[in-house]
Amino acid sequence: MHADTSVDKSWQQLWDWQQTDPRTLVDYTFELQTQVRRRRDAAAQNSRNSSRPPSSDRTEQPKPQSLREKSGRKTGGQPGHPGRTLQFSDQPQHTEIHCLLECHCGEDLSQEAAIDFERRQVFDLPVLQLECTEHRAEIKECPCCHQLATSPFPENVKGPVQYGRNFRAVLAYFYDAQLGASLRIRQMCEEMFGYAVSEGTLQSARQEQYQALECFEERLKEILPRESVLHVDETSLPINQTKHWLHVICTPLLTFFSVQLLRGKEAINAIGIIPRFTGWLMHDFLSSYLSFENCLHTFYKSHLMRELVFIFEQHQQSWAEDLYELFLEMLRYVQKQKARDAPVRKAHYQWWQRRYRRLLRAGRQANPLTAEQKSGKRRKQSNRNSHFGILTSNFCWVGVVTPERKC
Image (cartoon, rainbow, N blue to C red; front, side, top):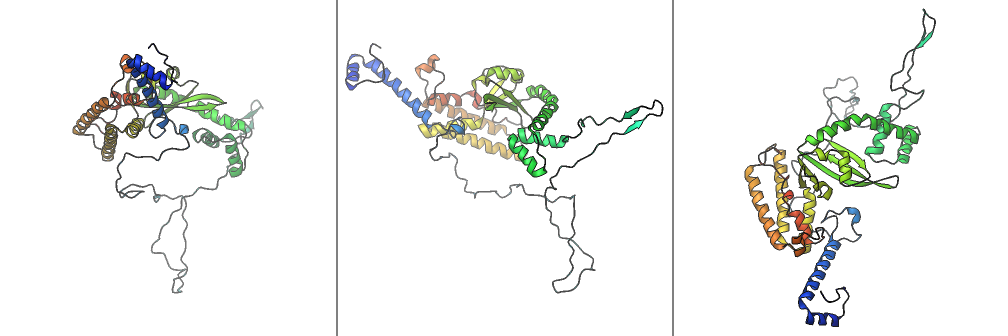
């Protein structure tokens, strides 16, 4: 391009340019159009239609436009829903008899025997207080050598006065599992139990649980690489004002956490589970995960569906709405079969797969590759083609359902 390609140009400069080199001007205009589209798409992204976290959302967001059709049902629990109400206990810890002394007509019933009872049960906590157990080790004088001998205390009774292991486990649970602040946990203990727990006691209780879980952690590292499907994710975690990353690797029954200074492949290798894994790895298409070729990859459908919402709302491409509905249809069917403990029929699977591939063809026609993408340049782009590239990967299909297997 022989002309100056800076963005700011006067009307006269553009006119002269089209007179001397119209083809280059067309390329220049197309590049500007691409940049505008990228910026417009980036500005339209939020946590509802992309993988961006909610914390990145701006204060003013457009009203959500759901692609789901209205079911016509009322909000709330539906008929047949199992619910989560309290159930009667067959073995209550306490029973209180409320005697009937007088009939509503005034007759004395205090000496009459009860013929039946109407039951009501109340589930409540006992009085919250610490119980003190005193351990006394016998001291005896040996009749043979006349020396004093003392019986040993239990291994977990180490000091003259201390908190028990159950209470210390609760302290660690509030701090780590419920993410309670140290000051608030100590304040709660003082107000509820009447004992002001020190910071040292709280931290030593956490250290005890950490050491007790070491064997479980090592066992998880042995079991998880043998699983058929692993779900992985990571989130930032500030520790002493330094950014760390909390990595999670889990199945429906097992969960492994690891705190690392880094987020990417170096941290994943340090954990040591994924490098030995050969099954399906489900993630949010982070490039560090995709770099592992020892396992198969699939993506979280919730992330993909948000990308579909973006393509449909911002670019009005109907194939994206149809694919969104296909994912929902598959989800509802799998949930229904799971509730019945029934397998996914092969006919359903094949029908879905045909529709899926037909929709991908429609998406490819609506989003042809640019010259840069064909040449392998600018792989990381925030335009509609980059969204479509994620969605049209074969990884998007696998891991949704498996035919003729129980859900």
